Image 1: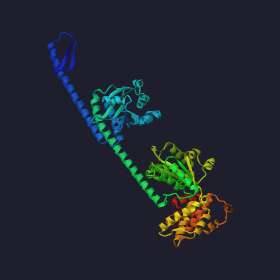
Image 2: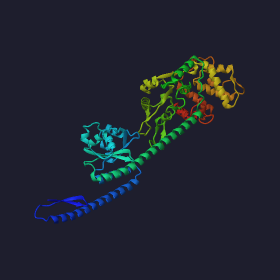
Image 3: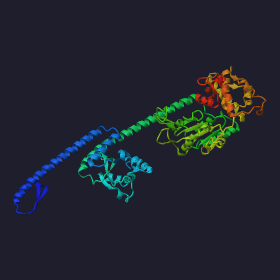
Image 4: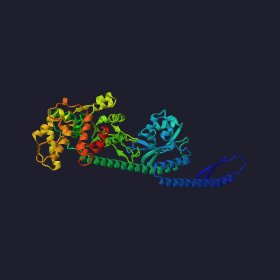
Length: 574
């Protein structure tokens, strides 16, 4: 026999007793009293539950208010999942991208991070990258807007199967609950946690309140990350501008006027045509020629006639930079990547982005760096020293060398695959001794420049001086001619240069002697002798105004490097 227990027309229970000789009126009275007592107990329990939930939510809100980073947020979420849902606390929180079509991993509890969960490196990579929202799981959670329990085994027979499902399956997790994270009716992301429980039931209301708190914190953290990324980007742009400013200042101080190519010989006319043909393309150019033949001038002429002319042409002298620093010089480095790396620095590839990178003396590049350069040319991306991310670069390469690269390949000093990558469009410059008809025009050009620089009115060169210039064989090529014209301008007393002030030992090489009468020297020997003579002329002064570096038209660091390579010590210049 049963009696409904009701309070104010509301059922609160059912009293069931053994039938017998019982006074029905008495039972109705007992039932009424029981109903009131049970209703009071239920009401008290509901009040206690609500108070507990309020207390938990208040504690959670206070904890979230102090959450300034992902690590703190992660610990709070793990604790709440354990306490409220009686789970192990494992979860994955994915944030939606701005387009709302893809999602990316925002936060994992430590035990659920891809590195700890997955035995498959490719699976870890997939989880860490952006994935499509329409993966069969996240789309359902976001569209229904409520917590949903998923059976993992069932999902494997209902493709597509997201990577995180495969990762959970590796850990023998059979069920996961997914819930949307929303703020002001806007989807921010989704949280997934492993559980074998049925849907949340009585804890769902509290869980949804906690999700609202999580949504606020996650939204703030995403906004903070965005601001931080913007600040980093601004800092990088600022650094890039500073690097460009410094580079341009150095170029102004050390470079010459490259606005014109000078020459009237058939050889130079051929070079002009080649420059015009290749300038409009992005093809790699390899400029070949002896020291002082004007390889950098050709590189600048190509750049200035190209669509990239509004951007920088950045020069790197591969021989002037120590082998242990050239990688950092080219690709940049992160702070702390090596001793002395006190701050992040961008490399010349980044500085030359959308412009041209001129790799001078490419034949001197160490073999181990040649491999990395080849990779950059193939992949069009770099990685800073000590960095973990690749950076896309759009750079045109012009390389130059005075070395015989084919011979270097045979000797194992230069990689053949890099040579073929560079040698797409070779331009070979003849030495000045093979195109002496260009000497008068070049000499007149230098006279005009240096007379203006010195504040003197020098207008011409006498026929005798020109004859002297054309008789000399110029082992240092145009650069050597330039330096002697500068010296002659400084020593001239009127409007005409009547004598070229060649050293006596060099004058002996002019006149009736043929090249067969002159002892044959290697390029290095000639360069060494020439540098020694210049050092002697400037009394050993290397840098500064009137120093050897200025006369040679190269940075002091380059001169030091060449002196070291050629075995020249400062005492040799005395």
